[in-house]
Length: 369
Image 1 (cartoon, rainbow, N blue to C red):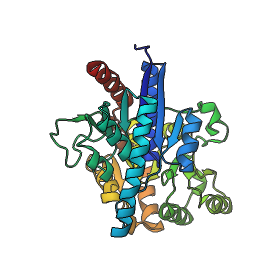
Image 2 (cartoon, rainbow, N blue to C red):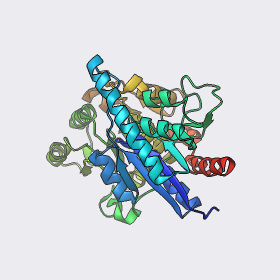
Image 3 (cartoon, one colour):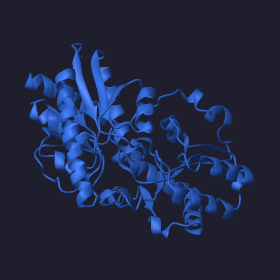
């Protein structure tokens, strides 16, 4: 175990899919080196700021904007923003003097990783998806190492910098007795369903799932944890009350790892973070990829599981209450299939991904030092 001071910058975030792998890696590195100084550099998005505060990590925001999808004037403006964020990042490198910089995706990571490259600081990027995001595709040339979550990450097969390690999964932030599941959880005769559209919610999933519930018989045999996103919370909570269904409803759950351990089936988007968590916990899922995700990467993620018999894929354009009802009912009455899906998921899991990345970071520093 290393006990010498070690300065690490983790950059990227804004959404849970980028942020939580960074948090998992930071936690693993602190276990290996308790005296490590870890700084997250990203955006000032409330979700990012509040989540890092909850996990106890220092955070600094830089000024950055996405480039993809903009008109020529917008791209020119974004390029000027990159110059500003690069200057901010270079100043940050001189101030913090990091031993290593890890980019976890998201447009805010670009300037920070490039600044590390300019100053000769060891650096790596971590890609969560089966199809790399634009920022990481651009950063691949500047990175010393590329950590991937999928064995066959598109476009990087055989790349000499690539290390297939899996996607880091956060640990539970609260004890199970604090989650409310023990006191208000499912009865023995109830099926525990998890519904989530990710950290920002998903209107199409919220709508289709509530429509599906109205069509189902035996709703009293269901217990549901529903992460709605901020905009849908009040409306969805009232619908559960009207249907007299036992449910926990919230815009966001920080105890998601504990919930996933207990749930029997999930209805969710197909971001890399949730897919990795499904694999670790062996939680069968109905995956509904976000149709507007960059490069349609969520569909690539979902297909990777569907091809293994580990999940059911429903395209967002095909999603409605009746379709979702039929798929849910066919799964919850088929315990053999659920068990097989769970077994397949656990076979795909790489639960030590965070520690593996942390080991590489510390060892790389030693080698370079």
